[in-house]
Amino acid sequence: MKICRYDNDRLGVVIGDNVHDVSAVQDQIRAAAPYAMMGDAVIAALPEWRTRLEEAAKAAPPVPLSSVKLLSPVARWTKTMAAPTNYRKHIAEMEANRAGAPSKMGPDIGKAGLFLKANSSVVGASEGIAIRFPDRRNDHEAELVVVIGKKGTDIPMDRALDYVAGYALGLDMTVRGPEDRSFRKSVDSYSPVGPWMVTADEVPNPDDVSFTLHVNDEKRQDSNTSEMVYSVRRLIEFASSFYTLHPGDLLFTGTPEGVGPVQPGDVVRVASVPALGTLQIAVRAHKIGG
Image 1 (cartoon, rainbow, N blue to C red):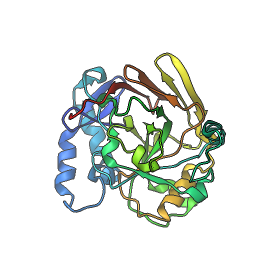
Image 2: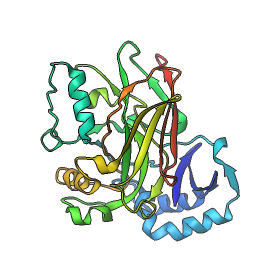
Image 3: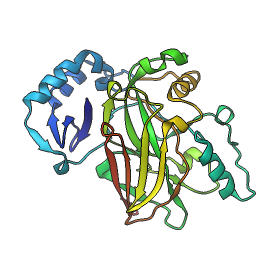
Image 4: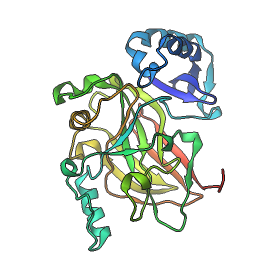
């Protein structure tokens, strides 16, 4: 099942090229959830409410996806986690780009750890990327994003996928510079996710997902999650050894080689297997004060 959020916090199920409004079910789920709960009520309720969501989608008239404004597929999550240096060819690429200025973090993900991005940096496909520092290099990084489905900590690898609600495509946008990594990667709009979330049953092996990234008509990135240093299972185990994971939490799994700059006027397109769809997002200049 493909789940999206759109327009003014509507919830939809995507079927073909259409979205079917199931916001009434979303309202029921939220009304039954404790206000103080950690994480996203809809994501947490998916196992119990999935049949009702599917029935509501069948009863709802189709609306063309092209006519709605897609938001982040998750409305409320506790953290946005990201994996650095998780593809060996990207590690080599970054070392070459540093030209004698070694990273403070180093290339070993096990030693560098994960990093956090501000939740306020997450946007949907329709919201666009706003370049805030056009005089500096702003890079794209295409990634598979894991959406956590239920609360868990100290999760062993062999049970890790039991904690996954679904997957989406993402961009870990980066401003290059001397500041702390999380600071530079947490600029407003620098964590696009979408176009929707596909439930875990539609991605039988998250460690074998091909994806590409184009900037305008130029292919920049072309890889497969089988090339990751830490698999999806290992990333969940690693993250949960430091944090308690909650429903809706986002885990960016790292980017392959081919990272490059974007500028206002560009259109970035991350595409994968049909279930995950295509995350297409426009790049614009940040408007000062707005």
